[in-house]
Length: 491
Image (cartoon, rainbow, N blue to C red; front, side, top):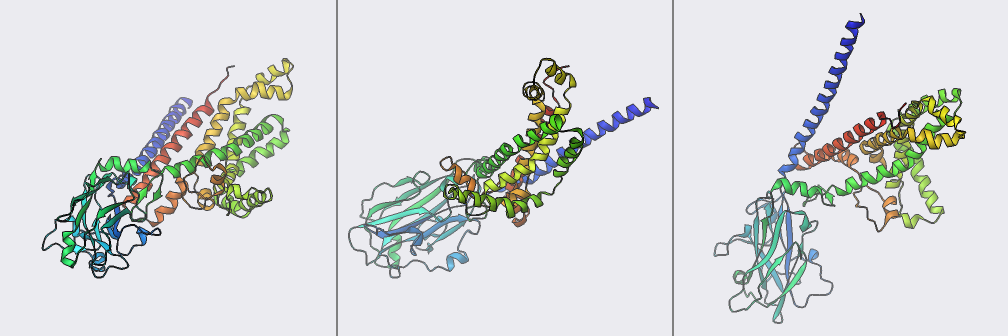
């Protein structure tokens, strides 16, 4: 009978192993397949330009100037005159509001001419990284302009960061008005996104004279392809996928995940290993029979229960403690939902996992090592410190890595306790980083996936995050299991 059972069991083990590999491969294939949607990204960019008399008022704000022209490529923009542009009357030298000078955009950057349509603001559609665009606009003074100088002011449209687009953005003077000697203008808007430029005054006496004024252009020239532009965008530090100028910088999400993981391990690893040592080496047999199942039972507590425990007890207790110690300003803690609250609750979550695996590693050490310590006259604690812990080092490291994998992939605790605010931690404010809300990779995926369109660019970026999280967790898990099984001692 045995000669039939042994091959059958061996075959079953091999089939199980192959099945696990197929499931992992299928999951990875699915994640990568959905992540491909991110590479359909088109890139939005936009600037505001306005003309004013010289010198500029000290309280001037370009974002609030009603005469400013917005030259923008956004997902809502179209080629040609759209409703957004139609809703704003074209500029007139007689209708400028509180300004003796103004700007006017050429629709879709066309060459000026008798039939050229002039608009106040030009919204074009977004383009792939391989495609560029041109915005052209006139700068002119109204009959109320006094003096022989005028100033052109430019800056990014609200929410746009020039460093987040894979294009070279330049502001150039194409043509000066007849009879006026103007300086050469060729400005890199990536290096100088905000600025002003003084020009000799040109006064448009009629609306037809607008096209005789200064003709400028803003060009977006490709510098890479969409594949590398998408990957490069992930390495930025701003995550704002719902903005008109969407940004997918995932660095703060991964940094928050890393900090939460390390802090939780600093809490859980010492406590978990200490609990394992007590159960394995110090506890009476009857107590051990109760403690080991109890700790393993703690590992099965639903994470949502721990999360609500953090909201109702851990977070408020932390706020009260730092308040009594006078450390509240240093932490900047205003809510029970913060990075440190997540780390504390995550540490509680990891203790059973680390304690259980560590206890197994200590229990598997041969009794002969303990007897050898006694024979050498070592005390119980000397045997523990000098013999048993070094012998179980691989298992303890493996237990810590398994706890790390659990922390990296945990979602519910982070979701309910982090505060849901993307924030890039800084070395200048270490304590403030801990007391402020944060957002990690796992809860970003869980929250955002509810509000995205299937197959959209945002959807694809979430699957890029999921793929990276899956790979990291898988590698850490496999490393932890491998180390946990490896012995540093021989019989």
